[in-house]
Image 1 (cartoon, rainbow, N blue to C red):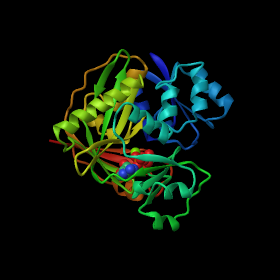
Image 2: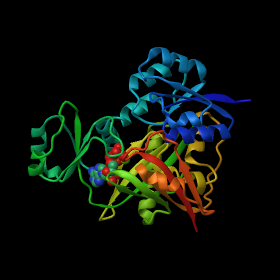
Image 3: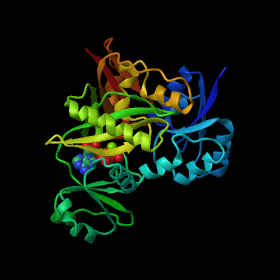
Image 4: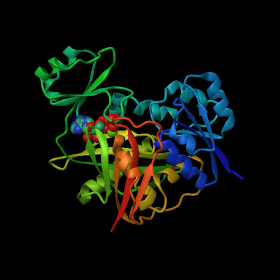
Length: 348
Ligand code: ADP
Ligand code: MG
């Protein structure tokens, strides 16, 4: 009955939505996750709980699937690389290795002649003193950060005194861009240089966590075209297979910068489920499982609101209009700053 079995590493909300999209395409899914309460177990055909370094669990996982993908980028490179020796991992582990390291990622982007903010590697406090022209800036852990975790805003050298930074980790210092707007591009690359690109999405973050996304983004044509071009160049250079997200900054002088790359489906693309004929999740499955590519058609303008922490309670008891689509990730525990669900509203 199933055409193929897809292994998904990671069982959060992105894993849920990937599993739902796969089942629509008659692809069986097995989710492997290091959280025994992972929400994706409610949506996948089979769920495997284990540490990402547990060799026996990994072997078991590999034996159950034809092809493997992942829903978040912080999986140890060694794990992905080992799996890739037996069954294909898409996107390729080597891509993940670049992107999960903020400095390697920015070096890669700049080598394509694509602008990022200025940045420097930091190993100790005194390194910051010698690059004070990058202040005000953001100090970020080089690996393992998400949703603003592992980030310290640094306004000036004096403010550095009052922050306690754990220098057993490596950091990148980025100059703060005077933001006018943030946008993202979701792009799916298939084999043979073929792409499906969604229109730019305008994003609002609160406390470094995505809060709101909408299409169309209110941007000029030059930024629209340049963001699509840069996203395509990045996907092509990586020979990427699957869905990829590029996050951009636009400064007050309308300069465009790439902020970061997410080698996976992305929170800002949740509205593609309702606003397009094919969602970012379905496109990811189509690309990694080598299924037919369906040209994108937009159905509607849309906005998406992230439901964070205990805000979820009121949504669980709410009635929705016809143009509103509520998604509850069914996470076991409500936590402060945790993404619990989202609401997409289709607009005219
Ligand atoms: P994460 O991996 O947590 O998504 P990001 O680097 O994308 O980390 O940072 C999260 C948010 O913080 C960005 O979307 C932006 O709103 C803000 N931010 C991060 N770096 C900068 C910067 N250099 N200049 C201005 N704002 C920034
Ligand atoms: Mg980000």
